[in-house]
Each structure stands twice: as C-alpha cells, then as structure tokens.
Length: 452
Image (cartoon, rainbow, N blue to C red; front, top):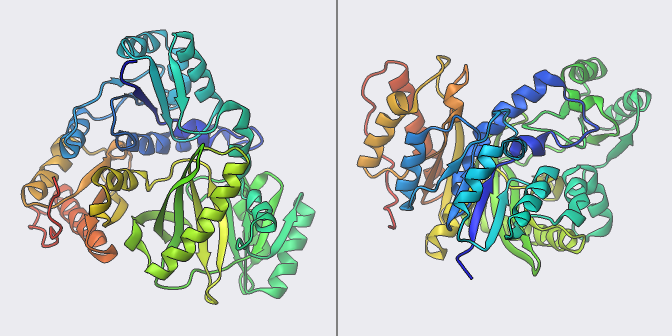
C-alpha cells in the first residue's frame, strides 16, 4: 500500500445553498458565494498530511507560500477548476482538465481521504469519480446513506428533537409556525409574555435567518421588514422563541466536535464574539471560557455528539449555546460542518497537548478603500511583525478584494485577552499602513514564544 493522500475541497458555497426549499435568489446567492470563497481559503489549515487542495480560482500565491512557511510544511499542489462559479466541488466535476490534473496528482496513491466543509451531493459524486479511478475513498464526513442526518442536524428544528430526547439539553421556550397568520399571532402572543422574542429560520448563513423583536418597539412592523429583506425568513416553518440574552463575560459559547465511527473523538470549547447577530471572531481552546463552564459545555456537547453518532453523523460539527443569567445553557443551533474555528483547532492539533493556548480569530475590516493587495499592502506589515517575533497567522486574504476589504487573522496567546490583543495590535498596524498612517509601530504583545 502506498501513502494515503488527502484531497481538500472547501465546498462552503454548496453547503450554504444546499437546501432546495430556501429560495435565496441570484443576488443573495452571489453574496453567499463570494463570502464562501473567503472562508474556503481556511482549508489550507484543515489537513497536515500529504494533500492536494482544490481551491476556487484567485487564491493569492504569496499568501499561500507564507502560510506553509509559517506552518513549516511543504506547499501542496492546488487544483483550481473553471468555470469559477465559487461552487468549487461542482466546478471541479464539470472541468475535465481539472479532473485530469487531480488524477495525475493522485498517481501512485491507493487511498484518498476527502476533506470537506460539510456533506453535499457533489461530495458523493466526486467520491464516486475517484473510486472510478481505482482509488479507495474515505470521507471525513457522513456517508451518502446518512446524508439525511447532516441535513436534519443542520436545521434548528433538530434542537427541539434533541431537547426532547437527550437529558441536559434545553432550548428556549416558543412556538413553531407554518404560515404568516400563525407567525403574526405567535409574535404578538409571546411579546405579551416576554420583553423580546426571536424569529428564526431553520436555516441561515452569517447571521441571516433571524430577527429579534422587542415589546417596546414596533414588533410586527419590524418583523415584516425583516421578512422582506431576508429570504431565509420567507421559508416556513419558523421558530418563534423567547429571546435569551447571553450572560455578560462569557461571549457566545460553543463546542466543536469531531465524530468518527468509534464515537465522539474530540471536543473543543470556543467562545464567539458577536456584534448584534454577526460573528466577528472566536476564542478557541480550553481557556476560551472559565474551566467550570468549559466542563459543562463539554458534557452537553458530548451528549449531543453521542446522539448524533447514533443517528449516523460523522465528521465535524459545532453546537452553539446561550448561557442565560440563571446559569442555564440553551442550545440554539447545530452547524453540521466545520466551523470558522477550524484553523485554530487545526493548529492546536498540530502543536499537541503542550500548547493548549487560546486563539483569537477575527475578520478584520481594513478601511473602505478596496481592493487591497496582500503582497503590497498587507504582507510588509505582517513581515515586520513576524520579524519582531509576533505569532500572527493570515488565515484568509481573498476578502482583500472586496469593496470593503476584509482580512482574517489568527493568533495564539497566554489567555483569551492576550490572544485578542495580538490580533487587535496587528489590525491597528495594518489599518494605519493601508490608510497612509506611516510605518506601523512595534507590537508589545509578542509574548508567547514560538514552539518550533
């Protein structure tokens, strides 16, 4: 037998648009696809073995080289299919030349592991194509026969089932509605009982798919405005629930779980930083929340993971919580896929148990002047920080091409506050440089020494 090889396919766009009952329309689909390209570049961190990456066209080769230099790993080959729709797995299946290049890169290997964002029909078609080349193919997610469980768990409705079936799992009280008449009635009724309610679609991307309504504001009027704006809220059924605010000081807690045939193999506590309903960053690792809370989150997450395993789920998934003022944890959703915390988790796994540090992972907005160049605008700042001993990792730079440029950064720290400060200092230096602020100052937060 020859050495197995990973084929890494960040099928983010396909996953986020895979539900045929949600009619996103071309404009929203375009936004989802562009953001998916930015998230897809995180895939460079997902595997540490021998691998081939399938990336949408347009990845930055200088960034790609820098990442692998920082990881002290050889630069893997890349296959970038055309047409470049952003649906990278779908594009690969349609591009004979890209498939031929992939087949040539897999020559000499008997076994392939498909490493993906999450389960989509295109993954199973690609696996079938690879098997047709005589390869043994393993999926790092659900097998095709259990695809349903990925779809089911990714719906927020699954949290209701888990709360009924799994001890220790709680969800906010509320009602399930199936049309506009029930929606209006449920909102008006629950606002007589609670100061705030939240209307949630079973599905959503990047904060879309939910709206919070207040008793002392024009609740129903705001509801219809949100429904008009957000296509996820135009698909029934919808959940109308009591809005449970997060207890201050913790952030938005979650756990990422890896499940294989043997059961729950890994649980990583995280704490998201959220601005209104949009995730801005995440602290990752055992110190991301107080020890007692990490233990409680891990126990609940393990119970959910055991239930998901019994139903056939395999791969990575993320369970999001709200920690209420009374100390109760409420499960708000399950993302049956890799999460944005994965680059940090992957680095923790690379470094092993000796480096159980905390990471801050932020999508940093660099002014309003776009596009920016990684090589000319960003890399000089990062190179000075690296020379000063600052451990800062650019996890994705594709967003530099957006009209409002975005850069994703990741840093280890002695604790959550330190890690976040490393990123904040780097972001400030970058903003000063691209805004004409002159040479960035030297960071004073380099503290954690490299480990090799």
